[in-house]
Amino acid sequence: MKTVTVNVVSGSYDIIIGPGLLTQTGDRLKAFGFSDKVVIITDTTVRKLYGSTLEQILIASGFEVATLSGADSEEEKSLETAGRLYLELTGFHAERGTPVLALGGGVTGDLAGFVAATYQRGVPLIQIPTTLLAQADSSLGGKTAVNHGQLKNRIGAFYQPSLTISDIDTLKSLSQRQLADGLAEIIKHGAIQDADFFEYLENNIDRIMALDDDALETTVARSAEIKAAVVEQDELDLGLRNILNYGHTIGHAVETVSDFQIDHGRAVAFGMLVAARISNRMGLLDRSDVTRLKKLLTKVGLLAEVPKLETDKLIEAMHHDKKIVEGRIKFVLLESIGEVIFTDDVDLELVKKVLPEKL
Ligand SMILES: NC(=O)c1ccc[n+]([C@@H]2O[C@H](COP(=O)([O-])OP(=O)(O)OC[C@H]3O[C@@H](n4cnc5c(N)ncnc54)[C@H](O)[C@@H]3O)[C@@H](O)[C@H]2O)c1
Ligand SMILES: [Zn+2]
Image (cartoon, rainbow, N blue to C red; front, side):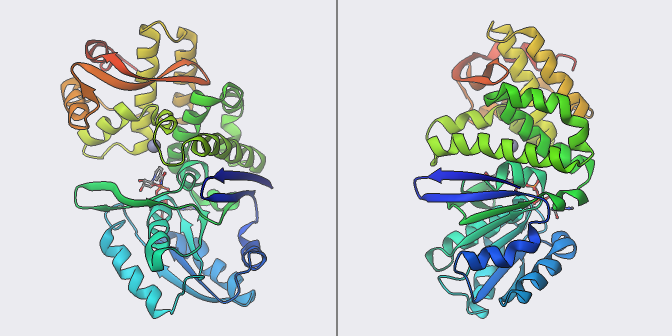
């Protein structure tokens, strides 16, 4: 088991990472001083896989448990669902001290986190992420959110959990595609901040994809450490956190133009490769580093179905996203594997040239 401690202005908390942790949840909650009621918020799939087990574990530890249905899709990660959950929490007589357990992927973490942040002006939140993306990235950083109409992730709160339990055994029911989605952000963390970790990923990617315990634990823990270090310096996303958007300027445009048919991990992988090529053309990044990034993303399968999307449409989407100002684009670029710079001064013409290049 590994522990990553996150020190944020609003307090510090632990992320524990390892196999078999779900069974310890009752004891860990008691150690926190919780004793009476707990609420689990989860989705239909995760409820079947782990929800009932967790409920039984908590009942055996003496808790009164309510398991509430969260969101089964991005569409259901909404204010309406949050509204329903507030009423269900009230029906269960959840009080200011009643912890909410977010059991599931990033959708559940965002929604249950938002509900915990706002119900009774804030109740304790325990994150129990069950996707690789959620364990390595989304459960960390305190951003909670729901969607509302066209406002994607725009209604939310910064709200840190009291504890995060990342049981790597839960990752074993994920598909290779879901794993790859999480690996896109993990590779991003290595690329922007940690050359040694990037090399570790290059050497161990087969073990990770084969769900080897040791490799998963190391990968989740290192990825969490990297994000935690960035978040600790910029909890409210006022500057440094920008570097976590590496690959996302183009990634978001790819998602929009493909009408969200290309999933986030693949869109970001494409965005990272294009940003690396731009970095190379601007004389910042060695060509061999572009090749390493491409090789790793290819091995994970993230570049396999990359889109033939029209350059003009991608540029238009970036305009719309306010990423382009007077022919210059805001970009996170690589200086080497492990080092980034943030600039708002990339020439639009260069981006137009690099975008359609063969992968
Ligand atoms: N708050 C943040 O900082 C942040 C960062 C990145 C992404 N996000 C959000 O995260 C969400 C995406 O997260 P996600 O990819 O985890 O999506 P998700 O929660 O929808 O999970 C993906 C799918 O995997 C299933 N699933 C979850 N755990 C499983 C398991 N152990 N075994 C089998 N299936 C399992 C879910 O039921 C779902 O169908 C988006 O809503 C995005 O906006 C938030
Ligand atoms: Zn992302």
